[in-house]
Every structure is written in structure tokens, then in C-alpha cells.
Length: 483
Image 1 (cartoon, rainbow, N blue to C red):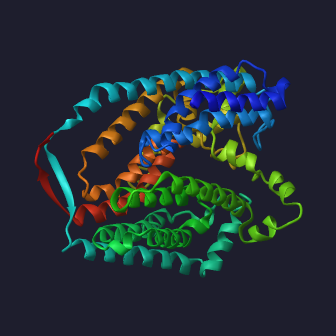
Image 2 (tube, helix red, strand yellow):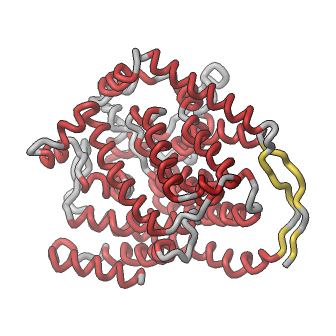
Image 3 (tube, rainbow, N blue to C red):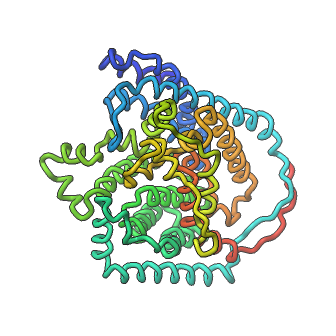
């Protein structure tokens, strides 16, 4: 089925524009699409669980490695604020070859896991089990929710209320202030933006004991409330990814701890997610004028001018072929005079959460190396330097194109680790409330984001909920179980 979908897509594009699409770059891109599409098809058909890291990687990777680069060529897409490349096809093709080798390594690791490791899962080794301690958990949860709510109130007070908060965001839209209004508030955001997920954790902890809370009308109502709360706790800053990941985390909590979510609802959720990403992408550019823009007669012209069209969403926001192909093109250009980082961006990402008062030493980071790769070593414009390069892109910044396939081996081992961890947890283990975020990291974040963003997301999203679960749970050994 993956093969049929890929060939059908390519056939339609070639029928519509044979001159543009008839190029050797289709071969490696099709190979990538077939490989990653297998897990995508199994995920959509329910053969892989909704919260399977392999399934999520397949679903998102199908656009990442197949659909996005095809649309890039088919639509003649060019990246904003960068000198255009006359013919993208060779660079997307070479990038697809590197990704194809990497995906082959990834699939080999997954196959070894399924053949050699999974058959032995009938025997579980002794390890501890976490269970909610109902004597301490409510106190810790409610006090944490109170603290996070107060933190958000303090933020709104600092900006003169919700409208002032939105106005501060609008001042940063043009890039002139570089979001200076929000600088220095990272620790406060990390606390305040945990409130929505704590609310979802509280619901999931109680729902198994109240059958009425497990009905679909109640679950849908909970998701609506969760989304609205998430918008007011961080969403108004225009961060689409944080909101989307929080919604997936919330869905994972319900799926693993309350009630299995059928794939029909997942498909409907994907549609809503696309609408959200598109709408909030417009909000990210226009702020309070979003509704006015979306209802304008020349809305498509306005969105094209601001790089917020549907093509930008599918190719740039949900893809990395554009930025990775551009980096590969520039690394092969001797006039760029680029110097590899040899792992410095990963080190900078690990050190970034440490306050300057403790570790004042500044080292080159992804922004520095990324800017050198995109503009040359004499780059001047800092506004356009902080792009997201993804798994393959950051590997090239540090070690060159030949390092790309090896990063997929790391991805494979991470996916296997998280998949095994999920199996080893018992049905009522309270760590299931945290597991969806680890599944997100292995299935989506690791391949889409750079290490610095992954570190920030983990700290902001996971730290407070982890402390609540850890100190609100009782830890006891679980006996060995043999079938």
C-alpha cells in the first residue's frame, strides 16, 4: 500500500508537470517514501498503536521525507529571505540519498528489535512500579496547579493584562524587538505553561474511578477545555509547536491511561491540527488582525507575501527538505568557507539551560553555525539565522553530509528504548502520564527539531509534571511475571 500511494502521487505530479518532475531525484525520494510510508500506513490502519513512536515517526516522516520535497519542486518553492537556488532537484535528490541510507539503517535496527528482542518479551525482569499515592498526590497536584496559575497571573500583570500581553507579542512580530519583551522570563514560562498538562493529569488520575468521566462526550469536553486553557497559558505568544505537542501529550494521556482513542478520531484530530497550525501561523504574523486578514478579499495574496500560505505550512513548517537541501547546497560551495562545528551545537544545547552566573562561558551554538552555513561566515542579518535544521540538518552543520545516516541509527535506538519502556510499564503505572512526552521526543521531536529546542521543550514541558508524578507516587518493586 505504501508503494501504491507513492507511485500514485508521483504519477499525478508527472501528469500535471512532466518537464519539472521528470528528474532522477524522484528515485531516492520515492525510496524514502516507501520505507517510511510502511509505518505510516500501519499506523493509520491501527496495526501500530496511536502512541507508538514508530507510528508517529512514520506519519510525520511521510511528509518530511516524501511529500514535502515533492511539493517543493512541483510548486517551485523558494525559501524566504535567502538567495534562490535555480534548480533544487539535485540538492533535494542528494539529500534524499543520505536520508535513504539513514532510513535503511533505522529500519534495520527496528527489524532487529522486532525479530530478536520482542519475541523475548514474555519474560519481564524485576523492576519498580509507580502508583499514585492518594494521600500525597492531590495535595501536590493542587499546590502545583496553584503555583503555575499564579505564575501566569504574574506574567499577565507584568504586561498589563491579556491585551497588553498580546500587544507585546505583536511588537515582536516584525522582528525588530527580537521578542525582547519576553526575554528573561523563561523560568517563569516553564512554570506557568505546565498548568494545562497538570489539569489533564488530574483528570486522567480520577477518570478510571468514575465511569461517566470515560465517556466520549466527557473526553471531548475535556479536550476543548484543555485546548482553551493551553491557549491562555502560553499559546498567545504564538508558539504553535508547544501547543500542538501539549495536545498530543494530552491525547496520549487519555489513550494510555483512560480510554483508547480510535484512529477515526485521530484522523479528525489531524484535520483540526492542520487548521490550528495554519490559523495560528497567520496569528504569528498578524496578531490581533488575524480575523481581519483571513476574511479579506485578497487573503491569499496577503498570506503569500508574508510566507503563511498552505505551501509554506506543508513545505517549511511541516518539512525540513528546504532548509536541509539549502545547507547541503552551501556546504558544497567553496566560496561559503564554512567550518564544521564537530559537535559544538549539541554541547551548547546541553549547557543552554545553565544560568550565565554559573557558567558564563559562551560557545558557538546552532544559531552561529546555521548562520554561517546559510549566509557565509560574514553573515550580518541576525533575524533570519535562528532556523530549525532538524536531525539531518544539525548533523551536517557539525560533521558534514556523510554524518546524516548515522543520526538515524541513534534515532532507531531511541525509538526501540521508548517502545520497550512502554511495554515494561504495568497498566496502572503513573509514569504512563509522562510517557507520551518521551514518545513525542522519539517519534517527532528528535527528527524535526534541533537539540537546543528539544532541551528547551523537555525542560518547559516535562520538569514540573515529572516532579508532581515522582513525589505524588508510591514506588514499590514489581514481581517478575512469566507467561
